[in-house]
Image 1: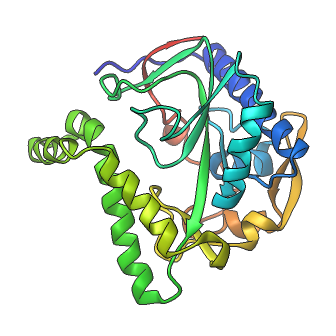
Image 2 (image 1 turned 120 degrees about the vertical axis):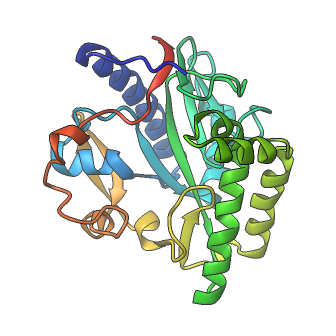
Length: 271
């Protein structure tokens, strides 16, 4: 597994393509009155830099599952399919992540350790789909464990290559023999048991959002923040979101210099 390093000029070009993807999603969502919000490092970037964190190498948004269903239908009509590709379990039979992506056609970006998965690749942006979770604390803890298992089953073909210990690589190799259809069914089962529309707390099922998930209002009560000279949807309570336990500390402070590095290393890329 070889990791290619990007110089600042190349990283900026990557960011420009990712931002192009975000603008296409924003266009479709506004046209069809679909709610989304920037999140993660993209939200921190908007709050702190009014654009990309200088060393960030991806873009993240979230939307409710019900909104994603509408977005998926809108993409059939409105997505420029000559330029972009909506990637999820349905559109790519080898795709293994529980969230969706928009890819830029004609580009290549293979993350280090994911060379053998065989799924379609390219410069992308992530769309985290938020689903319902149980109402009680006890059930949420059990459900969190359930989500952990789903995540590891999907990750297994990568884990068997990139895990540091031989024991973990062997364990993931065993998990990788389980068909993708098993965790995909597990995601669908959770959606049936805990409908998003009836939940006050939500989470991306295959992302470590924590047992108690996110407040529904963070995905429904929106404002706009400047990002790279454009206004994009963000939680109205974005400060509360960014102070949430997943980030901690003062999000307006820069991290130590040694942590100011991209976090999606590639083995190969071509723009």
